[in-house]
Length: 456
Image 1 (cartoon, helix red, strand yellow):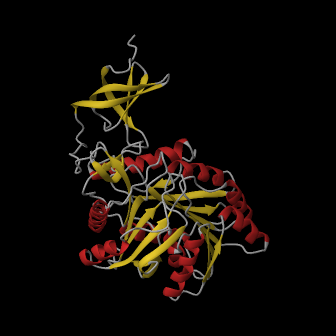
Image 2: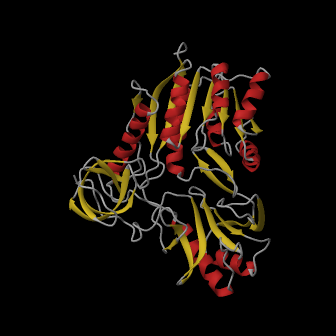
Image 3: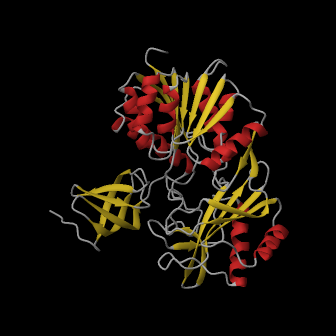
């Protein structure tokens, strides 16, 4: 019987792919994960990690290639931790994501009889991101500004990222030259010394407005007037330049304090008919074209007639809230980030929407309090972070018994867990629509229609 050894080469047939897009095969019933391998391929791999129950292999050579394979469009694809599905044809990426949702719903959710639609993709699946966050660090060859390598804090410096807005790449280039010209100190994670930590950009895809945020370990930026001049004179529509103060020894990118050094504290972009103020700390979907698809599907699943009270939980800056307001009697938005709630109220005013109300706090805390006061929803929309909904919140919704729940999810596994809990407590999952918000990555967003079992 063949015993696997670290740093040895093996041939392996790939029979599946993990939720992160790694190829999976077996050597004498021993599971091997191979980054960059595709289902149906036979590959040569070097074992680089060996545990009792599995091994991790490095892809050395493709012995038999899958027809789903294509040449990656990025030169640093293998080193960067971003677009790890570039080697798959786009239609195959969509199938992978649909299958990922199906597997989680069946395996974790134990739900067999729900209609899961094919993943909705994009016609143009490059340059789709309206937000970029570039870590800044010192390397052997000087200053590095780019993205982290897979599972590390090593920064891959490359002039172009094909999924980011072209404006973001230009901002990165301008700021990097400014750093070098003025010898701006770079933050070091180990010593906690140095000034500049990250460069963040936000770009309004419909309005063209640009925000530049420099995350600093301090209170001010030397020569900031020179940076303002360079950005203004080189780029059109720079509306906001902000210093974000983050002096904490943490992996959290943004601090809580912002200092506007040019223009306004927000930029404006539109989704559908609505305009939105976007601040540095606001949650705003990074793919505006697919966001409209996602939110329209959420509105469809809500099944509103104009008479319903609706809760929009984890509402961010009120994007889904305003979409729901078109067909609801009243919408209550709940969000834990105070800056986002401030923006949500401004967005309601900006769009002349009067049938909405926003509350600050965690949904798991606010909703039980609201329910205790006798305020109940006919329809509830939840759009939680990757960890899913808090059980306290789900228990309150079960007690409240809304007619319908619409669940917007960015994590199929926690979605499946929460759907299982709801299914065990008088609710039924009607249908699931995956949407490709993040082409060339293994991430997938879903919109789920859920109804009370005795309320079809």
